[in-house]
Length: 145
Image (cartoon, rainbow, N blue to C red; front, top):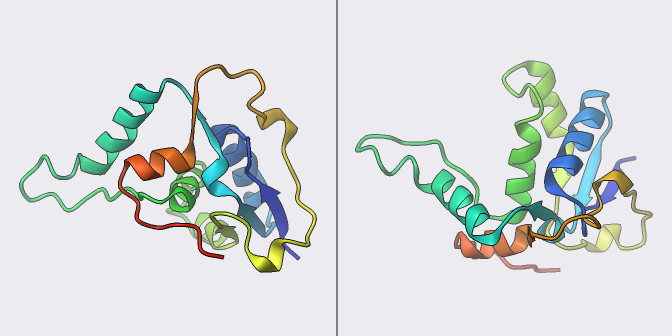
């Protein structure tokens, strides 16, 4: 049975490092409400960072990448990927055990969610939701449940 995490109000980096650690231990993890995860920092600085990551391949004439995701669930998965040795077979296997959803799917509405209290945003003054970053980057994917 998979461990279900609710990302609502949790800081993206701290949540991702905790998830990466548990994935390396062999657990199956499902993350719900990825669009409600929090990224700490000033709005303008965060949007500039994520938009730059999307367009840096366009600045070179023949460059094909790197391709950076626009949707909040894929951004969270990419963040976890950066914390797992994904170029090794063990890291690829760990990433296959991770499933991320925008919102709460029907099959997980009744299940019990785990949370990671050290990742709460209670101390942050400046932050932005991952869903807002995704919208600013031009994501056309909406919550469909």
